[in-house]
Length: 460
Ligand code: TYD
Ligand code: MG
Image (cartoon, rainbow, N blue to C red; front, side):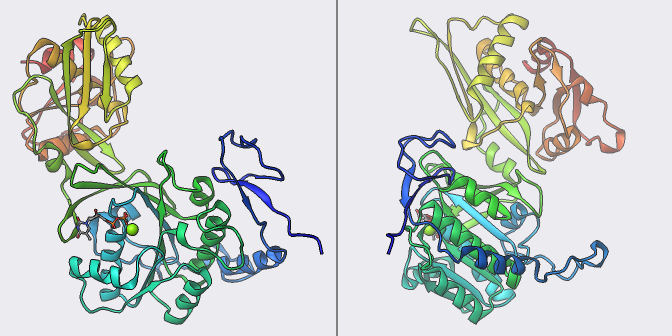
């Protein structure tokens, strides 16, 4: 008998090579090839069978005859989690929740599982990482009481599928896709072949039985989900759990969502009894704001469909070394360099011999152009040692000519600023002309055309 052939599979992109090589020819990643057994011979037959499960029938259906109203979303009991999912859990959806170890993935999903079990029906929480006893200990901390919540400490895919078949749950949680293996497939758990195989089987289980399945995914050193490309294409929704170890608050971000807006944001706080949702993040991010001090500006950014006010801080000091340092955290370093160059050339500020440090308070990351004016305001305020007017918020994109460009969704940002008690907003001139009906009361809107004008309006 011929010995079974092995292939070498890139753990980054899933590309297969007949021989081991140091660099994947498909994606150019180094040292990512791992020896794996190819899928069993019967795979095409199995695949055909699976396809029929996704559609639930072989024949095509007429668009107008397809019912959508009979599958309402399931509320997860955690408002911020519903928000990132686009308004609740969609039956039959396969959701992937990725995040660093210890960030709170298992905690959040146990809370959600307990709520759904209590309100809708049986839930299966299967974990390949913790024993039932450990999960229950955590549950006690979270105040999970008697509810039809089934715990399963299992790493074998086929066993999990059997339990799904037996219990007919209304929600399934699979804690860490990287620990699950399929007995039909001989590669090690966590290898890209297994991860893809397991995810595909769970996808068909979700679609076939119309049960939502949430997968937990580990993140690799460089911040990607293990087997990133392979997984993100398979699932309906990809969520990332982010947060800094030194801050109590956590952020869940939507990266992809077939059932709602992408780049939606949910904010949580880790407490002694689980994750608590924060429905008003602006308040959290502005809580420790240094009012009336130079080097601080408040800007209004949009995360998904939600406006959030954040504080940008800047510190400009004379450099003791030959070449000045520029450090940015929470905003793009390149963007900071560009804005500093514009300020030098167009607003006459001399920053050549200065170190510039810029930080977005509270560990937030802002990556939209509307943040430009906030950064410029904070830096100029620090250079000139003059505070930005109290109760003043800013937003606007800065062009290379020093002009302030219009940004999207200005009225949403203005309303959020007014709601948080800001009485003055410095905005691009093109955005200042807002219909009276959309104009928030008690908030003065100042339109500016150039960086110079903006700084004059901002600095006291
Ligand atoms: P966990 O959900 O186990 O993280 P993950 O599954 O993403 O690896 O969260 C573990 C961390 O959360 C751990 O450091 C302890 C902390 N924690 C609390 O602060 N309060 C709680 O009620 C719970 C359950 C955990
Ligand atoms: Mg965990």
